[in-house]
Amino acid sequence: MGQNGGAAFLVAYLIFVAIFGFVGLAAEYAAGRRAKTGTVGAYQKVWTSRGRRTVGKYIGWLPLAGSMCIVLGYAVIIAYVLKAFTDSVTGTLMTVDTGAWFESFSATPYGVIPFHVIVVVGTLLTLLLGAGSIEKSNKVMMPVFFGIFIILAIRVAMLPGAVEGYKFLFTPDWSKLRDPMVWVWAMGQAFFSLSVTGSGMIVYGAYLDDGEDVVWVAKRTAIFDTIAAMVAALVIIPACFAYNVDVNSGPGLLFVTLPKILQDIPMGRLFAVILYVAMIFAGVSSLQNMFEAVGESLMYKWKKLDRKLMLLILCVVCLGIGLHMEPIFRWGPWMDLISIYIIPIGATIGAISWFWVMKREDLLHEVNKGARNKHGAFWYNVGRFVYVPLAILLCLIALFKQIAF
Image (cartoon, rainbow, N blue to C red; front, side):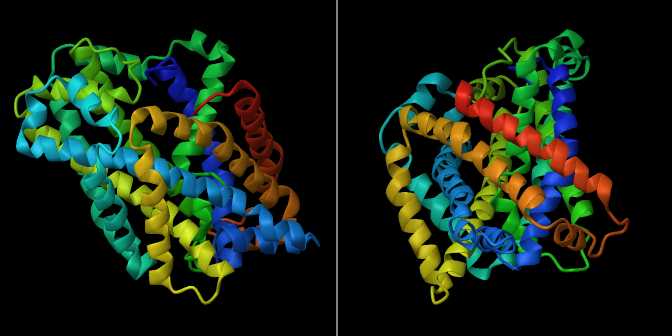
């Protein structure tokens, strides 16, 4: 929002979230539930049903590779957050030059190794108990996340000048919507935020009971994801205006700008601890999803692979590669590569597979299992003729314009 027109960007973003949540996310849940397995198995079943068994054996590995690649980079950023949390607890973060502090570990090879190891090993340990572990941890993580940010939002609302931030958030400059790139950025952010990448949400669908309404589940996912994002925005953007901080600072808000704000407010140290705890909770939840997607497909491919051994393999791969990507000058290009190429391609492969390869009757049958209201031609046509073209458009723009979402 800070980089792309504030409230105008929000309007475009909400439109795409509504479309992608209604059809794209629901289709991924449905494909996973129908296959009763994760990414690789779901694609194989869909393509084999059309007589393309050879394609089906291999095509699912690309979106899956995207999930693993995201894990490598995402674990680094959560290690940064854990470092910030630790220094908030000790009080160090409240007295340092935040720019120099961030550079001290983000610009140095192997600058956050202990934190990196804790993040990866800790997340994988939560997966030993499978989907039940994820569900239990999220029942704690997500309410805490919301509660923490609501407290912070109330505190920020008391700051002089915060009202200008609310104007930026909720008063659209409609002329911004004439810029096609605002729409493109909003579309890319919607894909990324909802995790509609052709991989991660499929494995969650595999765990859904036949009595679940997948469209309703997808709608709830989109609604709560958006609420979480807006609550976070209600903390950060008004605070930027209150302290005359550039709202266009991007990811630096979390590690350089935001700590400056926290240094200047009453009980800043306490709020810093709370903030970074919330970020850790949210980050670990995302890592669980991506690790589970990759791990389930490995076990699907190699039936005799023990779950503990699979988690150990993921740990070795993630740390073996990820530790070398800790400096921001390596991490940044890596995440650009993934966001420019892998994610849009994976999302497009998924969209085409569900709405152009999967048989119409099979998809609708799965979508309507447990549905409160049956879905037919309208839902399917929105997916086929709106969602798929948007996914292809995003993929082409990302490939040819090299836009990192």
